[in-house]
Image (tube, rainbow, N blue to C red; front, top):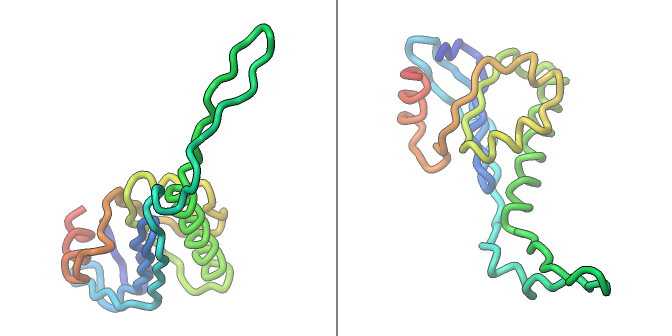
Length: 146
């Protein structure tokens, strides 16, 4: 993947977001951390207080069970929407011209739902991997080998 000088890289999952700028060049990238944000998001069973109920039936139909809301996933999707909003604000302010997004497939899908056209216009690549826990040097290496 071509990681040109001054490109920005968002490395995110549903809990953590790392926003980098390439201070190096395409051959020897040097990612510099611009912003880091994380949120505490306990597992679903720690957030849910009740089990899903059953719907009331009618004389013709039996009541069915209701689908339980996954609060953990809901928070991860909300966090992805916040990351997309940050990308939009920075794009509109002219803070970057070239963007690469690295996120696990599910988070990448949630981000895509919220991309603004200004973000999409600057998007030069996406990598469907979870690299939020990796050292910066490994992220640089993985991006140049993609």
